[in-house]
Amino acid sequence: MVRLTYLLVFVILSLLTLPAEGSFRFSQNSPEISGFSEILYGPKFGTDTTKHSRYNALEQRLQLKTSVYPEFSDLLADWMAELAFRGDFTIDQYFSSKTGFELRELNLSFTPQNWVDLKIGRQVFTWGTGDYLFINDLFPKDYVSFYIGRHDEYLKKPSDGMKFSLYHQKVNFDLILIPFFEPNTLFSGDRLSFFDSFRGGISGRDSDRHLVEPARTLSNMEYSARFFRNFSSLETALYLFRGFDKMPRGYLNEANRDLFYPRLNVYGLSLRGPFLGGISNFEFGYYDSPQDSSGDNRLIENSKAKYLFGYAKDLGNDLSWGAQYFYEQTLDYDEYRRALLPSDFRWDQFRHLTTLRLTKLLFEQTLRLNLFAFFSPSDRDGYLRPSVSYDFSDRTNITVGANLAWGEDDYTEFGQMENNKNVFFRVRYSF
Image (cartoon, rainbow, N blue to C red; front, side, top):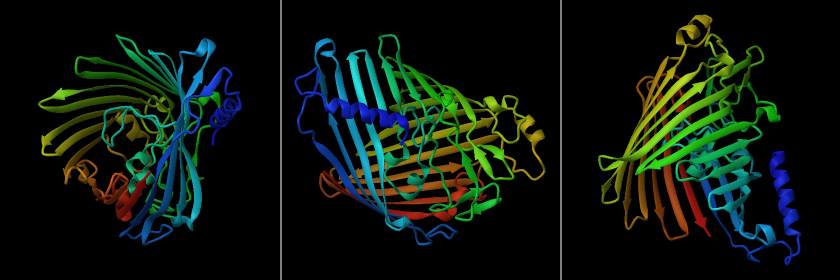
């Protein structure tokens, strides 16, 4: 756990030791604790060289969460504050019943005035308009959780940072500071096989690549900003990001099989509003690669332009659908091609990706049928994610689903996941 969280824990413990009748106290003596317990099992039917050939998920999880509301006196009497905690205790039988704990949330929120919010500590950041597709959401993701069948909430990873929000009639503003880099959780070969460019094919536990993260210095602090405003029913936003790519897209040392996370600047915008009886959205992002500004460094990914168009509509009778079209263009492509060696892989200049979501609710909305499909005509690959979820009661839910990826080439996003096909079963009891 990084130093910022340790500092926050120290501050919270210090506050807890203050006299109850002093300048600070909690508004409730016994905060309510809620959460859930869950079992996940994900048998697989692909063949690869991961740790287990019969399944890629077998775990038990207990999540606890609570909030307390500090009250201040004297000069801070009008401040509204919340201290939030959420953590997961796990037993992962995939790794010989390994026990673990993940701190998902530990933060202190302040509202000094109704036009200012401040939240500091461990939290999950998110914004943008995409459904499973992200352009201006440059916060870390956990793609291992996504492909083995954990709940969607685990696709978003928590970060230690601060969010500062200002609200005004003309424009609203969010500023997020993340002092220490947090990468995406990627396939390592233990649980999920993947395309290893050093080996030129699919690798499992035989992969020996190394991922080198940026140094934990203040000069490497990441900044994300958003300006947003509604014009009638149209939601608009501008985005700025300065930090690092969350994917290791740079080759630091080919002989030592070292990959690194290049610096990245992103400038984007989004629109969302009603259209033809449904909701339409558009998002754009210009990905500036400052370490390869001319595009002729074969070891670092070029700058890119990314576009997303989406539309969703409720068809009535608890049936809804949504579709998206994602377009990505590599810039300075001629310079990139001239810099390649004969032995290098050559990535395409353009990528097209479409998605479709269908959702149907039955039996007084206790049964949920869902299908999410990805298909890329340029990569010639795809991914199906069907699921059925049933609420036996307000507390008990069972979900059955599958992760079905395929592709003509093993180096594309979904083609590399073909050997990781699985079904998954989740049983959750909430309290």
